[in-house]
Each structure stands twice: as C-alpha cells, then as structure tokens.
Amino acid sequence: MAETELPDVRELEEAGSKKFTRRVALATACYAVVLAITALGGNNAMKEMLLAQQEASNLWAYYQAKAMRENLYRVQRMSMEANFMDRQGTMRPEARERFEARMQKMADEEARYAADKKEIEREARKAEHERDKYKKKDPYFDFAEALLQISIVMASIAILSTARPIFYFSLVVAVLGAILSVNGYFMLFHLPFFR
Image 1 (cartoon, rainbow, N blue to C red):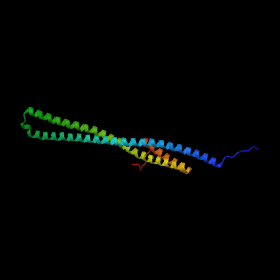
Image 2 (cartoon, rainbow, N blue to C red):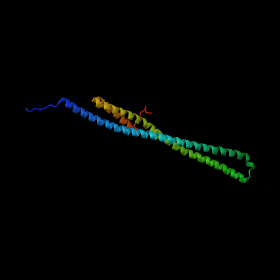
Image 3 (spheres, helix red, strand yellow):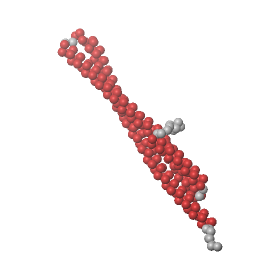
C-alpha cells in the first residue's frame, strides 16, 4: 500500500487564512474605490448646490433692482400725471406735447422694467430648482460615505481577527453604502428621513 502524507492542520489553517485575508483585502480595496466615487459625487453635489444658491441670490438682487427702478418710473409718471392734470389748461401746445411725450416715456420705461423682472424671476426660480435638486442628493452621498467608511473599518477588523461574520457584516454595510451612492447620482428613490 502506498503511503500518503496528510497535510499539517496548521498549514491548512494558514493557507485558508491567507486566502480569506486576500479576499477581504480585495473587498476593502473595492470599498475604497466606491468611497472615492461617492466622495466625488458628494463634493460635486455640494458645490453645485452652493453655486446655484449664489446664482439665485444674485438674480433676486437683480430682480429687486429692476423692481426699484420700475417703482421709481411709476412714481415719476404718477407725479407728472398729477402735475399735468393741474396745469393742462394753462399749457402751451408745444409744452403739452413734450409733457405728454415724457409721461409716455415714463410709462414705457415702467413697462420695460416690469417685463425685465418677469424674465429675471423665471431665471431665479430655475436656479432655485437646481439648488433644491442638489440639496436632495447631498444627504445620500453623506450617508453613503459614512457606511462605506464603516465597512472599511469592519473589513480591517475582519482581517485582523479572521472573523468571517465581521467580514459579511462589512459587505452588507458596503452594499447599503453603494446603493445610497448610486441613488445620490440618479435619485432612483426618496427616503423620507433624508431632508
């Protein structure tokens, strides 16, 4: 009968441990890649939100300036109309024509500023909509980053302790983080507590 040599139990455990360590290390590297992509999305969402807020603020300030000019022309026109009503009977025809032309110019300017305001308001609301869109995305990235960081720590603990349950826990947490990250980019679903 041929002699077979049985492998040493310690060597088998060490080989299994190395295989487990390599798998967990590879998984941890994947977690880190997803974390980097998530951080990039979170930073971009925050940047876009702030830029849209700044644009909306600038547009509303411009809107307010147009409204002030519109009101100025309205007040001047109304003052001229009141003055015209008092003096129209005593005015010479050429003075009356100039006065009426000025009142018409004031009315035209008032109307122009009112029309300008509408366009500016539309643009400001559009910028606010963009801001709100990125504001809704941001919490998904924040929570995804936290979950991915926790998964990396748990995977590191799994390597040190060679505990498979801890690795599986890190895998579940990483998957949840990846799902939140993907949702941050595409807004596939809305969680009510992320406001």
